[in-house]
Image 1 (cartoon, rainbow, N blue to C red):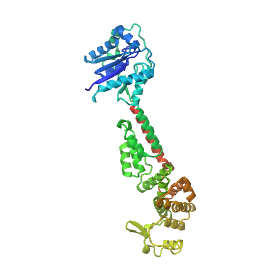
Image 2 (tube, helix red, strand yellow; image 1 turned 60 degrees about the horizontal axis):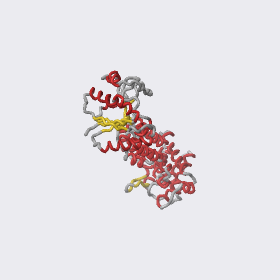
Image 3 (cartoon, rainbow, N blue to C red; image 1 turned 90 degrees about the vertical axis):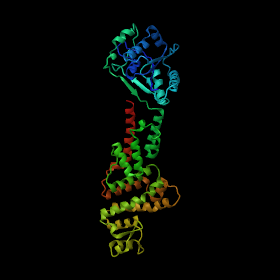
Image 4 (tube, helix red, strand yellow; image 1 turned 135 degrees about the vertical axis):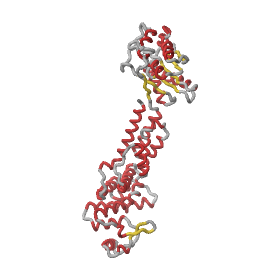
Amino acid sequence: MNQIILFSPVGGTDPISMNNCRDGSMLHICRVYKPTKVILYMSREILENQEKDDRYRYALRSLFHLQGRENVEIEEIERPELADVQDFDFFYREFRGIIGEIFAEMDSTDMLLINVSSGTPAMKSGLLVLQTLGEYPAVMVQVTTPVHRMNEHTHKDYDIELLWEMDEDNSPDFENRCKTVNCPTLSQIKNEEIIKKHIAVFDYQAAVAVAETMRKEDTEAYLGLLKMAESRILLDFPAVDRWQKEMGTDCLPVKAGDSRKYFEYALNLSVKLKRGEYADFVRGITPIIVDLFEIVLKRQCGIDINAYTKMVKGVRQWDGKKLEGTNLKRIFENAYRGMFREGPVYSDHFRIIIENNSQDLRLKQLVNDLRSVESNIRNMAAHQIVSITEEKIKKMTGFTGRQIMDKIITIFSYTGMKIEKSSWSSYESLNDLIIQAMEGGRKRNSL
């Protein structure tokens, strides 16, 4: 109950370095963390040192006496036959079994510390790989050397009693050289790679679903950004604003109400195109074309169609009384050869009005091209069960999906909305921000 257990291979500078008279890693961890039980792993060479002067138990007991903790249990795992201390495979299997047995005797209130600074490189690697595989939730502890460079190992004429008396770390204001090592588990690494792949194709819902299966501390740096991106792709602006406030970010380049709505909708179409969701792309064209044509008409031609329409059961329709005797009525009669009828307002009506009122040839070509795209393919995608491919879009409209999207982007320049060219890459910028947060979070967790 509430035990702090230290598992430590014993290394060449344990328990006290002859070169600098400071704690070796094993002793220093005990000094800082005050474990209630210490389990020492001893190879043949270490056991030979132990038999000479009982140095490891002596140093530990001296420390525990200094701390007023006389009842700390010291357990030794002795391997007198172990001479080859550079066999990684052996230590991985060996430590996996030992640590599994330790955990079997622990309860939820206990904590296991593992010293990853003592022992041979093969021992340290074996322990770190165990942590990476994520089987046992131990705290990995690393101890820096007092001189911040590689330790020298000297054991000739080793005098443990003298070294204990000279140990500078016995001072009450000793320097704490311990730091925890947060190794990302194999599961975390795999999941983060999956998340990055989802982000690369703008599938934020899938990325959030994966992130929510991970530990909270592994995703706290970026989960909010993923949820913000998920809300953004759904055009849920209130949720986007909440997540931006919570994460302290400002990722949306267009912030004004209607401008943001139209820009984000168009950007959403661009994402659908990049994801190869061609049917959704062409189905989504009509709503934004209708709105953009209306805005362009008012901005470029000074015509507000609200002066000529009425609402009928929530649908905007042309009002015959308001149209009577107007230039718009004459334009419609000429365009439809006397067959114009009152009814819902469509994008073709805007095309005709712009065609007859604008002197901008480029604008008129854009409007005609987009209306042609809409009439040629949108109705088929909306009302038939049919496969829509890039090739079919090109065949039926004369334009690729990218060319259509470029025309939508270009017509924004006639609306008066202030949208920078770089803003059209803002989803890519958001992806970069999320990945930076993922990498930054991992670095912070490893400190």
